[in-house]
Image (cartoon, rainbow, N blue to C red; front, side):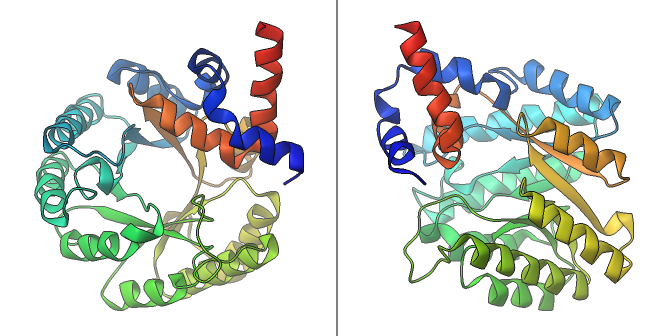
Length: 299
């Protein structure tokens, strides 16, 4: 990252929210459930699946965590009633993990019971390292109660051991991503190639171990190497899918679909759009630079 990019990222909090909202709009379905359902329906019509995330995380009030669960219950009902090809993704800090593991488990149980009744797939998202072990433990507790998956991050040095242990405990559905949180070098790979190498090693481990895998990346190199690995392993299309974020590299996304792979798009929605948007901008300094240019044009 250049010095200019570093400066842009560090000064993001000073950029007016209205400008960030305008630039980041393509990455968010909207603020309402109907907005999200409309986007999912469009992807389904074009042969793609979705996973929907109610924006929100790191809640500090149990009442707010319960509101998040209520939003997910409405989301699950809407997906089932409209017969959409979509699951849901949930961050445990949004449902109480940053308050207490007990509260997170209680709230997640409500969500999982509803998802089981409606036969909707649930993906537990992975967050930063203070929550990694507890997130995996909660996944283990609930993994047999509904169609449930977990996210693991290739930049963490512990992930290979985590993947092996999870697969030893039964059939596992993974979303494999690089990871976006800023972590210390003692626990995370910092070199881009090291992260890429570990990503591919983990993917091979998952394929060999019989896991279901969501290959979540926008990295051309990783996509190309993943396709080679799919071919060399003779992977059935039902055993894997590619996954991408709403609004990110749609041309690449469409080309993957044209090559015959299943695609799932991560569709976030909700009023808590600012935190999600600034994270997307921080992980993409070039886009953050565009925000700065927009600011000068607006001025």
